[in-house]
Length: 344
Image 1: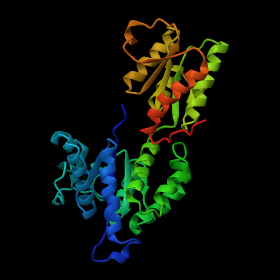
Image 2 (image 1 turned 135 degrees about the vertical axis):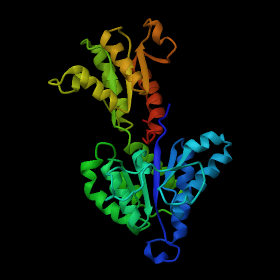
Image 3 (image 1 turned 90 degrees about the vertical axis):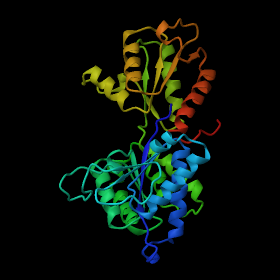
Image 4 (image 1 turned 135 degrees about the horizontal axis):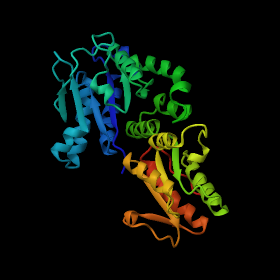
């Protein structure tokens, strides 16, 4: 199943001083509303600080989207989560509104602990904003949360973007190319719905590792070499790098290295043709860590009882297998922000 991300949207605008931003408040409002709708439409959760007009607009739009699809009230409370700093009044009541455990969200406050709206987020999107938006950005950096500050609306987010652009090669390069990051955050498009979709796709991609862990027999055989090559080629079409433990640092202890690679991969492809201990040990680790697993096996393989109820993709010739595997990888890749592959 797809992973449900917690996406924070923060920032703001000043209706009394519209010239403080590069675009009119109406533009930010329309995009924030599109973003709120798209976050819940794609199965993710919206987080807000519940203190600015922007927080209210984005939460209201997400709430309306859920109501339009008759989402149960209890799910609504899970899908929209907002936190209010002690001493402040909530600006909206959509979803669940909780009192923060922290009495101060200031970056120089009593405790160096990020507020929940940052600490519970998988990624932080910034729109416009002023001083408080700088605080949100700094907390996100401290908590090592990916930042998506939109430059197109101006305000604090534009300045945050200029800093992130300089940090990009140190922070983001293994997950997403720089040009994809820029195409969204510097876009001049006013098709807000489409830009919101691109934003969520970028979030999914930026928080998802680009590697796929391959579990298979260590036995040297031409058949397995061709199988592994086919897997790698299919994964590359969706900007994933497939590797097995044999390609890791051989000076490391093997079990911790296996656990590290499985823990940090996007998903797992496991060949269970041979009932080897290493195969089922690694498969058990993958399931225990909640990883999406594509099971494969040579046609005619008698599967152990433990996995007979799990869908298995059987291979014999590699041309047809590659096409079937491509469909499985594409299905995962779509909800991880990968583009659909063009027909060959």
